[in-house]
Length: 135
Ligand code: HEC
Image (cartoon, rainbow, N blue to C red; front, side, top):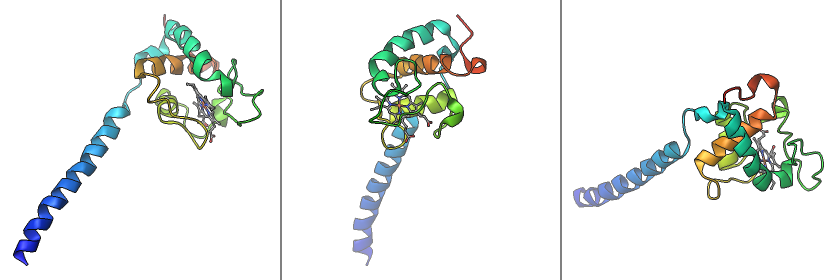
């Protein structure tokens, strides 16, 4: 009995640490605070150019997603119709990790700093009260 136990314990320890390493990675990948540039108008300007390259084929140039018939993409100007959260952190998460079945994750193609600029742009086409106001 004792010898079987001593074989099992290291295996168990190794798989547990692999599990926790995975959990740590997920925490590192998702920030806990929004980058302050989401409140910056110039960041939103820069974000717009990245938006037009990466997002307009589904959400349209104006964010309303009216023209696309292949996907029913979210109307990015109307956060009261969204499902996956409307705060800057939620928008970051939807872009980085995807949302629902058809919104693709961009974690491998867009770096975090650029994603925050795109978040600033998305806020900037949304309701007046959440638009960036700082330079
Ligand atoms: C291949 C098409 C496609 C591309 C490209 C795409 N999206 Fe989406 N997006 C969708 C679809 C479809 C949904 C709705 C998902 C759902 O509700 O199941 C969505 C949802 C979202 C949501 C979440 C809305 C909610 O309900 O919470 C945000 C935010 C968003 N997209 C922003 C973006 C941004 C910013 C980009 C570019 C970086 C982008 N999307 C690129 C198709 C796309």
